[in-house]
Image 1 (cartoon, helix red, strand yellow):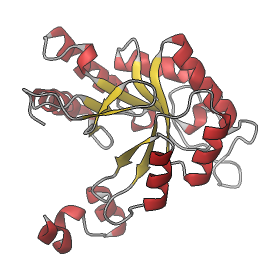
Image 2: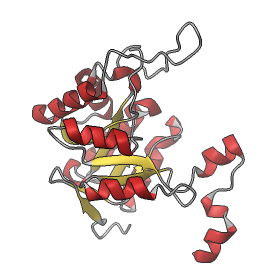
Image 3: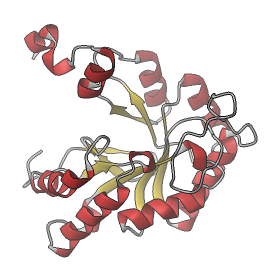
Image 4: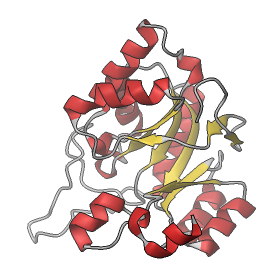
Length: 243
């Protein structure tokens, strides 16, 4: 993206526009965040993808504050996304306000339900994955995804969030959300890349006016190489030939 021109953007069902290319802050080491984000803003990035679970919202907030104070960018130039963690499904408003405080923002451009599961609450913003006595993830069966979504809608009414969406929802959960939503999800952020194209889900979302954002667009790259020994898309000989 060139710094001199506006980044390509897509229209969301909420009426807002989202830059088509974003910088994800997952796996960014805290000491490096300031330099990485300021450098990204200088070369033209205007969309940052964050999450409470990444445990670096405060560092992102410090970088954003510096960018605003120095005149590098204005708040209205940026599109900031962050996400509700599993253990905060019963505390949506508090969790959103916690993220806003850490990011040093008055509003979010996009707030996503990170995963379609509610787990035992461990304290707003702590994002730990609580395990039961049996060592299995402690899922909270008293909180439905519908309840969570209606709390997300309230954030829009409160002016804390401009657009709301979902993440890691399959076709059936996305269909259910459309059925009970008063404000339909503007975005479904899913894993999709050359190795995992998910054509049916992508087409379903597009048919119903839900913008698909690809997370892990390079096939996991470093993470999947570390965890599974898979080849990064960047090193795949077939993709290199196509490029």
